[in-house]
Amino acid sequence: MTERRGLLIILSSPSGAGKSTLTRRLRDWDPTLGFSVSATTRTPREGEVDGTDYHFMTQSAFQRQVAEGDMLEHAHVFGNFYGSPRGPVQSSIDTGRDVLFDIDWQGAQQIQNSGLGQHTLSIFILPPSIRELHRRLVTRGQDSDEVIAKRMRKSWDEISHWAEYDYVLINDDLDATFERLKIVVEAARLKRIQQPGLNAHVKQLHQEFEDTL
Image (cartoon, rainbow, N blue to C red):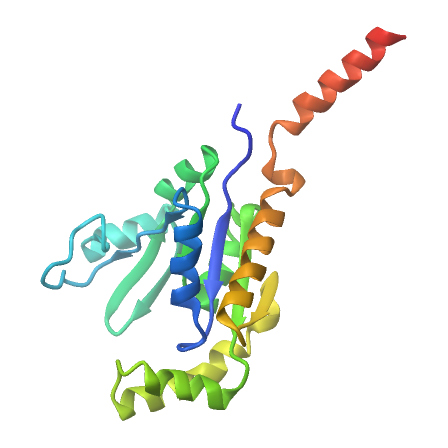
């Protein structure tokens, strides 16, 4: 019997709040953490590897998996479908391996409402201020002014769903936030429902108690 069940760890935030960095640090801290590889119907870009970057699927195959309940969450974005296949995630958590999801609030809701919702740990990352969020987007130098403006307009829609998450961390200091993130993960791993061996252990304790009478 496995010592514990794996967790579905969901991290969400507006762009620039530090989610990607925290996700990378979390995987460096615990290399056993899996990362959910999304499925998509879009065409592979140069250098992308099927099964590593994405699971590339036809639209009909994707929609069939959705209809059969084999996608934990899915969305239609800019003409293509994206989703999280259930099979690999189920296999991981059954063997005690946690799986990370870097998804938005809509995907988080779908997973929390799925059959695996009871094994979900959802965490939302807030910026310390909107001004700081904008500064981070500008200083990382990855996007044009137009894209930054688009990300800023979308940020409030993301932030407005903060109360739907189990935990909310304000990323005002990256190192301190990461320490808090580790504490949250460690605590969630000890929840009763994540420890399938507890019933057998308590029965053994009860038998030992009876034997002493």
